[in-house]
Length: 160
Image: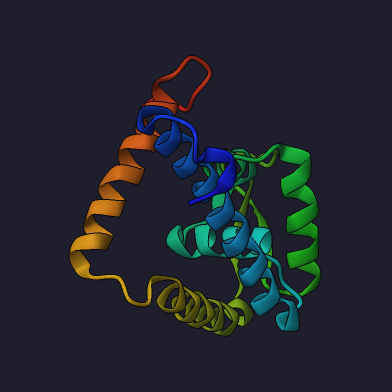
């Protein structure tokens, strides 16, 4: 137990401890994933873009992609520029409205996405080592409830 939480009653200690651990796990995941992706010239943000596009093979408009990723348009544009330079995405003008552009994965990206998935699986296995299926299920239920509680608050992402 952490020294700074020792003297708190349980009803105060455990929520603070859990909130701190959630942050630490999130930072550790980002750090380790970025470290694994660096040799590919990628980072976690680029990985998220590529995975979103893989899940949407017909492509996504920039606004939809930014919303799915929870980032602002200008941030997404910088990521797309870098991925386009690598030849992993293409921006395609919509046939029915030349003002709209869809972002799609290129065939060149397919190999990279498979490699990214393997890196993610390896890190996930390392992260979950020693946990039972029951523990993982319980943790997923708790984290889902926490996420839903956050989104239900004013200013949250309603319904996700």
